Image (cartoon, rainbow, N blue to C red; front, top):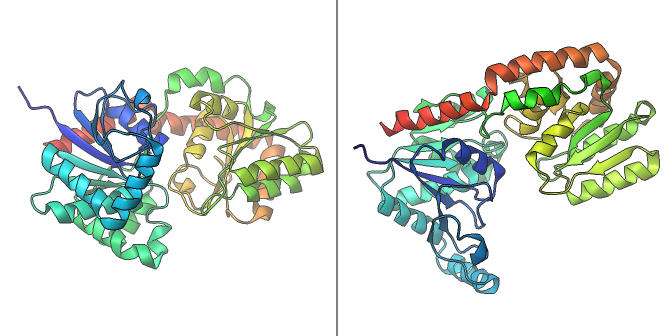
Length: 394
């Protein structure tokens, strides 16, 4: 009987993207281990894995359902003190823990899901473990190379990660070229969304409830910070107030400053805004996209925006920043509009086009559904993920 394959995933533990990726492979009978690239409890959707505690603050009552390994959590105060002491005395203590896990597990594959945390951590553990080292997959998330690769303090480590790894995966053809520029010479894996696909058969009747031109909601992704630019979107919407009668704006994943700005927008203009609470189920987010005429997502850096894919699947006309390789999924002016992320004038013009051209948004919905059928079927992307691991494990 063939030995069960062991996969060691190094990833952000509480990320929905980590959870969705693991969900694609959790039923294959593999011995899955998740080593957190940062302190934190695992996302509640992560199942059928062994989670390696690194002194996080999760309550004991919440971890009994799934197998775990490593340090068991005690109290917040004790663990906060432990983390501070260990980080101060032993800067590489977490890399040492990962190295110990690698030596003990002898995994068939190590997969670093994201570079700045997981990739750097695995690189440090590799220096401790030495040779032989298991086949190492590095996955580029969002801004890992596109933005951080332009920052001097990250360039050397990104190059080291890519030079030492055996396989590279990403969501954008743009990022394949960037990885080559940073010295990656080994195997590039097929370019696919990192968060998997969608159950298109179940979503089709939801998206067809109301034609895109008949919808009266505008969706706005509420990210604001080092990359997100939701405030630019709100400013553009304010400039469009003359054409927004009868529309409401729904904002999800809203940063605190975006919540305040939305309230001020409503106060000044009368435009109705609704903030979806943190933790809103993904099915509900998709349902709002299915009731939206246009969905706006702006950031100075991203890979393929999950928000863009959600809008395409649910028939909402996407307005997406030009920094998210949206041009690999939609043709500007046909399947959506691609805009500069920090120019409210350009975003305003895109919103006005989306609200005034019924034929455009309805044609785009049909075209984007065809793209979704070809590239976003969840079962097909799941099989690609399984086949990737099987091929590398051989």
